[in-house]
Length: 312
Image (cartoon, rainbow, N blue to C red; front, side):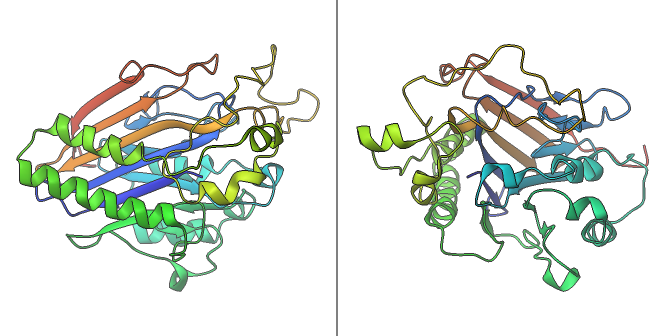
C-alpha cells in the first residue's frame, strides 16, 4: 500500500516528492546510494529480491526522477511478473546522460514494450503499464501550486482516503513551513510527519491472529485509509529464514519467500528540488535486516547535489 505525494506548491522548491514504501519486511533492499558504473549518475535504493535490482524511486544528476507504486492485485503471487517492475524504472533512470530521448518518447516506447506487459501491475509516476496509448497517460506537476497523490490504485481513483488525506496534509505542511519561515530540516520533519500519519484502527487479538504469513488481505481495506502502515503482525513472529536465495537455481524463477512474514512501511523518501537546481534526497529506513525497528533518525541517509547538464 505504498503512497507517493508530489507537489509544486512550495515557493522555494520547484518539486517536492515524498514516498512511503510498504513491503514485506523480509524483502532484501539496499540502502540509498549512487549506483555503480556505468550508472553512477543514478541515486536511490534498490530492490535486491529480483536480479534486476530495480528501484521504486530514484533521481539522476541530470534531474530525471521516477516514482513507482504497484497496482494492488488480489494475491501477492499475482504481483510477480516475468520481469521486475523495477526494470521499467531502471530503463528511465539508467539511460546514458547524453541520450536525447524525450520523456514523451520514452513513455510511448514503454507502454508499447513487451516488458511492460509482463510485470505485475504498476503505476509509474505519470504512466501505468496498463495504459494502451498516450491518450490514457496522466501528466502531473506541470504547473505550480499543485499537489497530487498516488497509491496502489488507478491514477484517477479518488476513493482512497489515504490519497486525499495525504494531499491535504502535504499542502498544510508546506503552507505552515512557509508561514513560519523555517529552514529545510524543519520542512523535512513536517513532511515526515505526513508520512508517519497512521489512521489504522487498533487490531483485536482475533484480527491479529488472522493475519497469515502470506495473506494480509483481511486488513487491506483499512490500509487504504492510512498513509503509514505499522508492522503487521506486530508480535515479532515470522522472522527471516536462513539461507534464503534470490532465485531458484533450478530454473531462474524468483522465489516467493520474501512475500511473507511481517508487512509495513519500510522506507520513507523525500526529494526536494530547489529552483536553482539544488536537490536534496533524504531517506529513512524503519527496520533493520533482523526486522527490528530502527530508532527514529538512526536509519537516515541524506544526499545533496546540483543538477548538471546532460551534455557535460
